[in-house]
Image: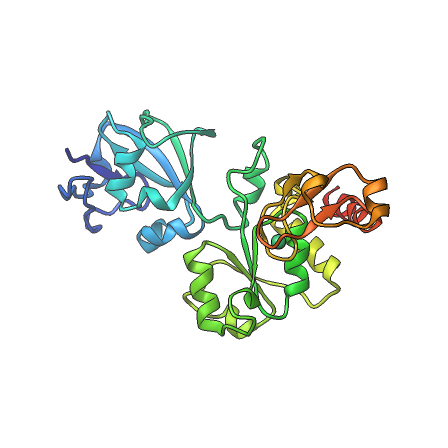
Length: 284
Ligand SMILES: [Zn+2]
């Protein structure tokens, strides 16, 4: 089937280029005569790249003929559903098969969150998705702190032990949907790099605090769940099955975790208590 979509009200322009519908039927944009029903659409962040220039970053009044689902609307607009993380219809989360009613207001948010999405995500019980990171070669310490908070974080040195080079970092960030953290302005200026953050020159805990606040990471953190050395999730371990531990540790501790990646063993020693204080301070 094909659906007809038109921009209505101010900005309507019958000469606007046509849009293909889901079956490639090529619905034209017939302006305000598009249909008896009207909806308002707003795309956020990089989803705007799918829209004509003058529809971007603004409310777009659409005319259509019901019944129309969100998926059909996206198809007619040329927005790939795979690029959309969150669909709000009149403020409530909706699926692709949700019908678009007359008067509906649709908000579309991209898969890879930009910062204007974060305040919205905070309204939910849990974030839709936990950001993942890639730290350049100068931010290894910050990367290990992020792991301490439970965030999936690759360090640039992980792959080879050497600086993999800017091209490899940009490619890895893109392929794995990781936010590249760097202090390198030239790297940040790469046009192919879509998800990156400049990290301020500051002590590591100040860098971490800045990142937590900018990305609203407090509720996404799962401290002490990940190996700070190799990024693998740690598992509870039976001390009887662990390699020799210092006798004092065995006497004082009864809970242990082991990293299945590198074999490192963790327990809640004095170092852990200091880190716990740091984590509690950062996440409060
Ligand atoms: Zn490990």
